Image (cartoon, rainbow over all chains, first blue to last red; front, top):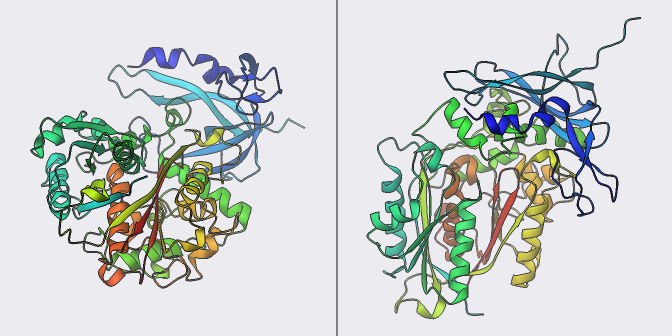
Length: 135
Length: 386
């Protein structure tokens, strides 16, 4: 069980909370306190919209422990509309496979089981194709 | 500065050594390297290893291996830098000799992969990614390489078999290396028919993780024993550079910045130009790493590295022979030992001991190993003093 390490990331996992640099306005995810663009301190919280597009993707068949029950699954680099890339699974893909450039949005889903008999479930962000508004 | 030389080299065959333990594998390589050096007495041991604590439930390899090799009492520690652990251990050995505080250093890379198989091995390898932001999403090192490959092929309009020449060259060269895991050439149609691993990667795009150990004895040139039997090999430069651990946090995922930094520093320190390099042992853990490394090192233009796969330039007879004894793909990828294997093989080349795979007149050999997708890059230049 690794409860504290998942608990302390709850803002990132459930809310996609990163940072914005007060000096150069770079949007940062995950939070890292030092701006990767200008090198200055950047501790201002910033909530990402959760919208972006698929930058690259692949399917995993031989999965690590904790993920082997859900294999095969699709992992992507998603380019958030505010700039950063984020690593996440794609879900709700339906019949059509993913494509580079496909618009996606964040959803909260189960990421994995903790591999422990007590079976802690870890939730966090995944991305799904953007739902079309009803006509 | 005084010349730092590779006095002794040793290696075990790479493969699935079910009958041999981690310590026994390491001992074989260590004994071979010490014997090859003419019996030099190491004062310090730097172990390159990346996953023993996880795969073998064994940390503290410095003490274990120094003692097991009959060297109880000497300085000994483990160096870990992911897949670059072997190169990083060599770097520590180099620094120790360069500092003047150590006269003879032993560098031993060892990895025992096969004690664990399946999902637990994948989970161990995934610890080399960012645990909080990559591994928790089920990302593996192989999937990371697949993400790179798809984006690279998309941006550079690479055809489906555009990277095939990298594994094909590696396998052709592995056929001439008795320590290689795979010693058979493969044909293009075998590559085309191979089963997918993580699309667009197939099984031939992924180097096999395997067991192996390799070792080096380093010293200063003036300390070589009388009647030293080999052409002298100098470590002309040693560099290491870092990049973000997670792939997503790079400004350009297709640019291996750490690889570029460490290679540039090597050329500066050694005072040679890229055109003088006679062979390049790149880190082809995945096919995509070959073009990205060739581009980062300046051997190919941005986005054009893949063309070297098919135009003959990386073959043994080409402009820039690569993976000359099989590379990671055919020799095998024994984790933290891989960087040390590269140094052993490069030393064989510049000594003129590479047999059927000998690069004629090889004087400068460039070797580079990477941790993750070039989160760490360690680059060394070996030079024949003959």
